[in-house]
Length: 117
Image 1 (cartoon, helix red, strand yellow):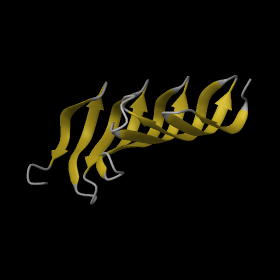
Image 2 (cartoon, rainbow, N blue to C red):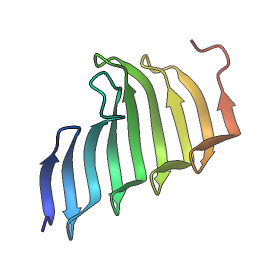
Image 3 (cartoon, helix red, strand yellow):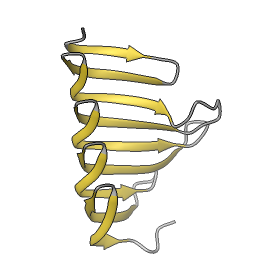
């Protein structure tokens, strides 16, 4: 049983961080492939976890094949989805959207940058 701080690695994912009673819980970083295909994109979440899901404050980065950053979502998370205050950024740090999110959807209570690339 995992309890404390540790690393778990499999063929398509790696997690480094805190565990409570064999579950990802607390602060940690997980990186995983979005599918089992060799050329699939990867995602990395760094932040707070509860019961194995993103929950609390954190940052999700989506990487294209080859490791180039594509999208960055940072802010508040609930049960694996953006929920609360957060923002979406380009790899160069340009804010695309900033404001309120509800269950993974930007609800528009904030600012949206229509001119960002």
